[in-house]
Amino acid sequence: MKNIDIHSELIIKRWGNGIKLVEPDATSTPRDISHSIANVLALPFNISFVNTGSAIQRINEAGAIVSDLWSEKNCVGKTMFDLAAKKCAQSLIANDREVMSLNRIKIIEEEGELNDGCFIQALSVKAPFYNKDNKIIGVFCCGIILDKQSLAEALIHISRLGLLDTTNVSLQTLDGISLSKRETQCLQFYVRGKTVKSIAALLDLSHRTVEFYLANIKRKLNISSKHELIEKTIDYFN
Image (tube, rainbow, N blue to C red; front, side, top):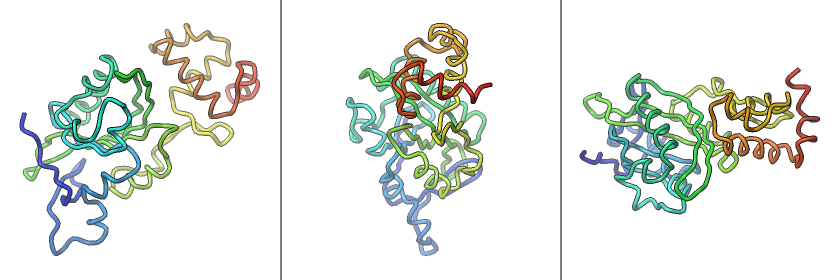
């Protein structure tokens, strides 16, 4: 499949149910220029473009360094199967294909294990990517690695691109700390006495994934033990 030209001077424009890349011209405003490929790729969270075959066409440094195995330069033409474990890669690619088939922007919680053994949890905003003939040729993705990249800052930038209304992005809040939907589900079962193994079965997750979520919650709340976690959070689920 032919690679898509995504050179740095092109401007990302909100178009239809997604985005289109256009050349700058005399009518381009400072706001337009701020949405050039060069400027958007400099943002401090994951930015990528993939084609309809799920091959990466362009990615920024923040996205490439998620895995020690990759750099910006060697990412082009690779798919998630080159980066992530099979189950994770299949899920990520399925999400891209759903965005293209439904022709609409989606906000998705994505998670899984990379080939280097690192487990990631991200909130992604994915939009159809059109060519000059208004045909979908791929997906534009903004991904925030939770607890490593600033969610608030990322949502401001993504909103400026016209890809979301930040009031529609909802994470559960506990003592002022944001928890993802999956973290909230795991915690709810955990404080009610369910084991990690039973939670994994109920949510169709791996044992390791549930442990990751619970450890992440403890870290966010600055808690070290199961007893402290239950004592601090049980009232939220009564």
